[in-house]
Image (cartoon, rainbow, N blue to C red; front, side, top):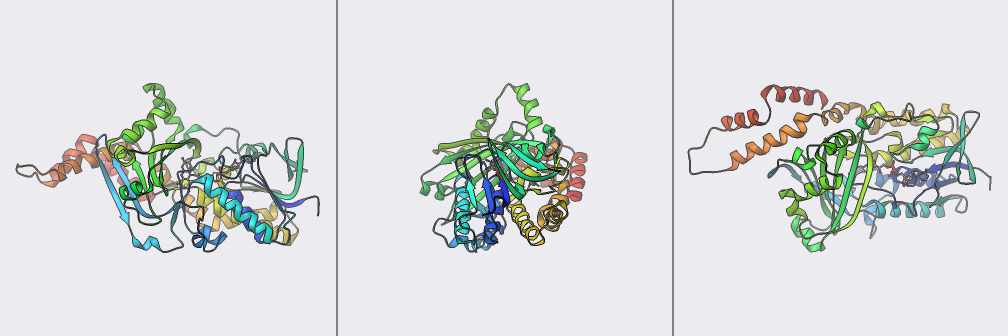
Length: 446
Ligand SMILES: Cc1cc2nc3c(=O)[nH]c(=O)nc-3n(C[C@H](O)[C@H](O)[C@H](O)COP(=O)(O)OP(=O)(O)OC[C@H]3O[C@@H](n4cnc5c(N)ncnc54)[C@H](O)[C@@H]3O)c2cc1C
């Protein structure tokens, strides 16, 4: 074999594994390096993998007995909460039961490991079964450049060389910064902390409690100051096979300020969320089996790397800040998968053209621009910024719950007109002017 690979992939998360699977199927010779003991060992996610890209990578994946996912999404709920109540938008549909599913609840340690198995299978079936590898437990410390072009990587004393490198190192993108594609300093305003627990139940208890049938599952997002202790952010709960993933995503900047004032820790904030009367009922009797925390981008394009390619290199997934939280869902895994596939397709084209310079790598950017990833990120930036709005995040949930409490309470007294009830709730928790402003912002954003 040549002493150099067609491609080296740094990071065996979803972006890296998706790139690897695409390369293996195209008979490319590559080395994927993951610092964890196995793919998924260091990954944290809430997490719902949205969309159908997985079917592109592993056709009819659902036909496998244990296809790496926990449940498919059949039931979605967005909950606005005050300190004692909740008001939800609730959507459940048999439409979601047909594969390929619209969303899959995954536990990353299991899912990434399964996907890595698919890469190994594809390598074995390729023209170069002995010349492509997944190497784990190795930390890439440096990206090697020669004459301005990326030509390989260094891990400890070892150096490996390739025609190009795909960086799929996730949100803590030290190598991306090392090669100058991202500024060293990313302000905390643009970053959040995700904190999550996996709580296990007897499977029958879980299925009865959440009305789950077979592999159907539920995703529930929560909004309101009483969910997050007033910190900018939100909560989530997703049903796995016999557990739930529950957690919070909190703005780092706001969290620092608020925790300093309250003297609480982030664990206290998570525990308060779990004690919320509506949430406590959902998780009662469960046993915590996993705890994790991870930085997550907030999806603000202002902190995207200056460029996502250069001579001999491409950035994928969260290393390129490809994440969006538009309020409807967190999308990071689907973006990671799609960008990994597109970067790998660009490697195949570069190999054919015999040109791994920026001139070919720029096709990756064009592909991403034409895909839902950058289209959505650009088009929905207004919605991303809207989630910082205090009226929407704090006042609206209080207002909605206050109004619902009055509206749904039947007393042995004459009923007040609904408009009066609504007006009282608006004046108590916000103002017509603030609601008008947020309405206009929302109309512009969506
Ligand atoms: C609490 C939380 C909830 C979330 N919920 C959702 C959700 O519901 N839906 C969704 O789509 N997204 C969600 N996300 C976001 C999603 O997890 C990320 O966007 C996604 O994991 C990004 O994938 P990636 O492959 O780019 O990076 P990662 O998954 O972070 O993978 C990067 C990999 O690179 C490895 N690595 C890093 N540096 C090196 C190095 N120098 N050498 C070798 N290996 C290295 C790491 O060990 C890791 O395995 C959530 C995130 C958090 C924190």
